Every structure is written in structure tokens, then in C-alpha cells.
Amino acid sequence: MLQRYGLILLGLATGIMFWPLEALMHDFVFDKGDFISNLFSSDPDELWMRALITLAFVGFGWLSQRSLRQQHELKARLQRKRDHLGRVIDSTYDAYVAINEEGIVVGWNSSAEKMFGYLRQNAIGKDIATLMIPERFRAMHHKGMERYRENGTGTMLYRPVQMKACHRDGSEFDISMVITPLRVEEGQEFFAFIRRMDESVVQGRRVL
Image 1 (tube, rainbow, N blue to C red):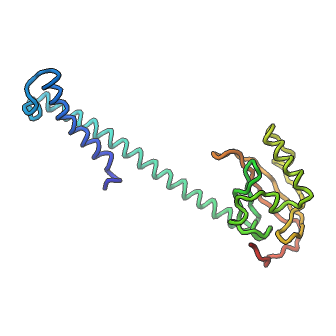
Image 2: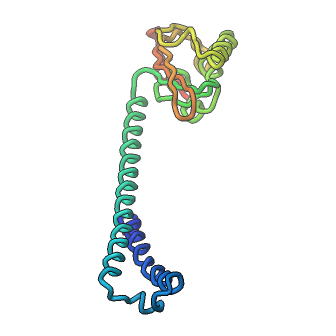
Image 3: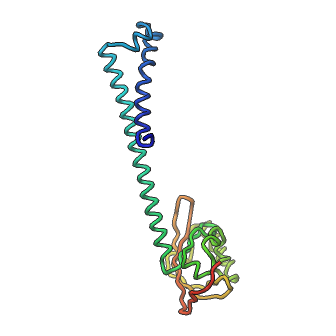
């Protein structure tokens, strides 16, 4: 009940608390009668003013409660959509990989686990170069990331790219992907959907 009507009840309580405060003001500030007679005044104008002020506080509490409820509902809808999108991404045939501007993995779906041999919990937070880029190409990758951080340009963005990638067991294979930068609340991220170019994908590999 408090979650549903808490701010409305607070508004009502604040409006009622105004009555003794007003009585004190009449007694000590305006020197009009004593506190008790002012508090229980039967003056129609006085009662009307108190009712209006109380209704104003209740109305403000109702509007605040309504706004808060709408915010909670909006957050819940956004969370449901985010969860749905996460399930869609996780079930795609292509490997989904996302990194931040430092090259640290922030997204990794089930297909990426199979393709590169690392479980999501072991990939998140790691340098992407150590997970899927052959060692001889890692310096080139780091240089490209540094160039993007400096001037916001990249030669491998927004277009199909074919390159070598490696599995956890050291085997290499060709992949095709399109890398897309995305500005998010936490900063700059890059995501890609990746597909193997060869037809000899080993589905039964163990991932760690």
C-alpha cells in the first residue's frame, strides 16, 4: 500500500501538519488569539483555506506518485526489451562480439563460445586480441584501436571485412564480419556479427 499510495499519504499528512503551523503563526506572529482556538477555528474562510492547501499537497503527492509509477513501468518495459534483445542475440547463428574502446570484451554470445572456444564468463573483461586475433596481427589491431581513440577513424568500420581468427586451441580460420561503432552510456563500443568462411566448422569442440 505504501508503495502505491505513499506519496499521496505523505501529501495528506503534510497538508494536515499545516493546520497547527498556521495556528502557531496566528498566535505568535500575527497575535490573533491563542493556539488552541486557532487550531480548532470554525471560521469558514479558515477552514476553506486549510482544505485547499491540504488538497494541493494531496494533488502534488498524487502527481508525484503517478510519475514515479510511470518511471517504474518504463524501466520494467525497457528491461524486458533488453532481456528479449539479449536472448535474440544469444540465439543467432553468427558469433556476436562487442568490445569497448580499450578492446575489452563486453558482449559474447553462445555462437562466439563455439567459434573461439571461450565461455562467456571467461571472455567478458578480457582483451579481444588474446581471444580471437592471431598473435602476429595483434600489434596491428592495437594500433588501429589507438588511432580510433585519437581521431575517431578506422579502416575496418562499416564494411565487410575478411580476416584470420584463431580458436582457443591455436587453430586458425577465416572469418567475415562488419564492425560497427556504437556510442553508449558507458562510452564507445564496437560490435560485430562474425561468420566463419570455411565449411569445416567443428561443432563439438569443448569450450572453457
